[in-house]
Length: 578
Image (cartoon, rainbow, N blue to C red):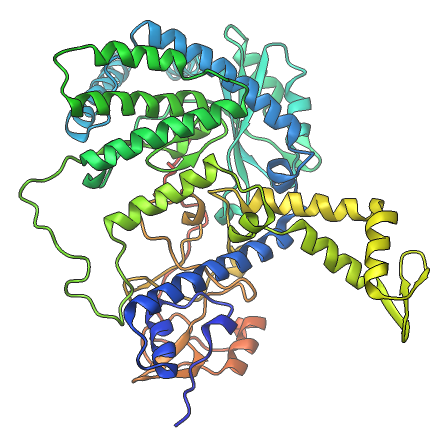
């Protein structure tokens, strides 16, 4: 009987490992698990590269995308960000010399309990203050005045939503007219909120923040009305990373890597000896005879991690980067190292596992993934071959494709250039002619390649397809890496913790996540629609259903669920300033 399973490489959906394994075992029954895992890794990389291409084509004309990745339009903002980082560097060195970072410690047992106690004290003080206000005989107006006075202590205004079609420059031009304006910070777009962004207008100390609020609240750019709130400092959040990061080998590796990363990021903003003052402080600690080797390594590593955070807005254990302190505080919790558990049983990653199941990510794989992202951030590929390996485009290949499209074969030994109608004896002569005589027509090609490569090399770029309205909801289900059913979570593609297994990417072309359905031991040609049981519907029916879902009755066995488009992004927090 001929298999009805489709080639994973021809599907628009990233298939789970089990489907991939079943398909290739039918073709090559003797394929071992190692070769199967290798092929699946290559398959996922190729799929992600295709997703990046489609996402770029879908969003390259949007203002938020050009602000972030365009080779010329993003330059002004990059220069402004580098100047802010230089200022943050000076502030860090000043505080370092004052001893503010002498007790920095990212071990979970010590740091987390300390942070929790501080948070409880702050919360208690706030509660007591509120209690004192509530116990007095103040009327509502007096209470409102006190609350407003607390709000305006901040020198920042929070923009609740910025549409994707609003340029950063338009916002900066609007805000810079107010005396005391310092800079504008904008978050990455939220795919589940139609790519809207959050923003913060930051003013210099002493600015009349109330007057700024009254001037900019309900201001309009084109047809969009901006709603502001007084910025409130968010409570500190903490999470822990696996205990492997506390092992001596890993501590040494992280220290070496953090140093190299700090030097690389320093060079980007023009700090040739930026780490020199930090290293001098570390040498002071190393001269302390009370410190053993482990404590010295941890102290040095923790100072470099703090340096990366305070100066370069880079979260080391999350391998992620922000473009402002406001956005960093919003999406990056404080990460602590779990200490090794002496009584923990060491289980082999291959125990109780089956080749049919998705391989569970081991601690080594977690470290490998974080290292890979940090390496890409430190050493941006320069030659065309390396750029293509990370999903980028080769400019020479793109120019050759363009030249080929502009060659017309007139007759044997006669080829015409479409751009100027000149005749040549061979195709290669026409291509050479285009490269030398039509250089102006090649500039847009080179610019688009640079544009795409800026996006492709971003270690936390957004990929995949996302709902753009409530009518375009994700009606399909994705198969989790452990074989379980789960709703797609596209927001985690760019903000997930590196030690968490990333979710399956929904299909780009269809706007819904559909997977081939398995009935018994055979994969059927039909597709399921959110049901965990049999009774799939045909492709033809599915196509009609996508056009007009209301004409067809819903399966009563279907899993009832929804995607909350107002839910916070993973690593995000609910911000409510109303």
